[in-house]
Amino acid sequence: MPDGFLFFLKALFLQTDNSMINLKLAIQKTGRLSDHSKKLLEDCGIKISNGANVLRTVAGNFPVEILFLRDDDIPQYVEQQVADIGIIGENMVLEKNKDVAILDQLGFANCRLSLAIPKEEHYPGPEYFNNKKVATSYPRLLSEYLKKNNLKTEIEEISGSVEIAPGIGLADAVCDIVSSGSTLLTNGLREVETILTSQAVIISNKNLNEEKKSILDKFLFRVRAVRNARENKYILLNAPEEAIPKICEILPGMKSPTVLPLAIKGWCSLHSVVREDDFWERIDRLKNAGAEGILVIPIEKMIM
Ligand code: PRP
Ligand code: ZN
Image 1 (cartoon, rainbow, N blue to C red):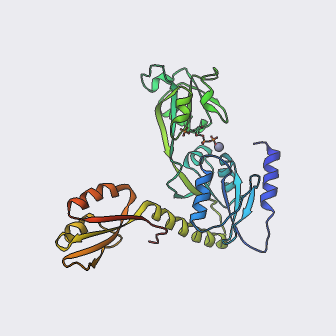
Image 2 (tube, rainbow, N blue to C red):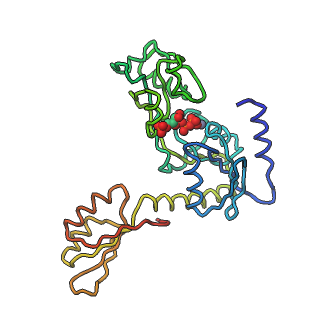
Image 3 (cartoon, rainbow, N blue to C red):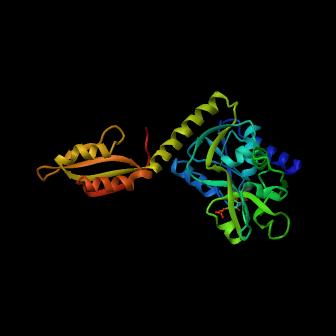
């Protein structure tokens, strides 16, 4: 970005009300991460209002100030402490290589950085890229990959709409973020190598003062409770008493499952928590072990 504009943004974000300490959190203004980032804040009970052209806002009920920025700029702003922390894709953190700490993975905005070629091209392996030109917004990560694979490839650095580069004759191939894959598909491109996989993370400036660190701890506590809740389900089921030991093996729970007697003699109700990832597989095993009336319920917050 031009220096003048950077200076303008810095001036804007640095003039804060000194009477109150707020943790400054940068999130993406628009794009793949922005809706999820706002949803995360909402699930953390942090209320923000943002109009279409708002660049910063202070939360109503938590000492945090939100800065809405281009994701590409967030690592730099966090390094310079224009923002204290940021929510951003790991891909961007690694590409920008700024001196910031990665605190937590957030489990959304999953994607990969991949090489893709025109779909009709024969692909013999990475040597395909020798003496070719690849368009990308990720020159650092791409050149690391090329070096590791001993490839002589020209990098054409562009800041956006990378996917159209082969179609307009700017490059032979692209190295870009793939999420659903629909951008590649609609541009007649085929993914042939994955350079890295990525998800949203929280990054932090490394020199936060004690006051900011203590707000950050409270924020991370909430984020982790939301994340644990999203990754787990509460499960209730009925089973005959004799099936309980077998079912307890299948449901490790937070510590051990809660077992309550039912009005019908010889029957119990079991309550536990299962990971979202493997609950389908466990539910089949539970049915086979004699479980009936299985209910799976979302968890609002989960404090470990
Ligand atoms: C990436 C990439 C594609 C799109 C791919 O952009 O450049 O445009 O996402 O997603 P798909 O596989 O689901 O179609 P990104 O969201 O990182 O935005 P930016 O580069 O414009 O910041
Ligand atoms: Zn971007």
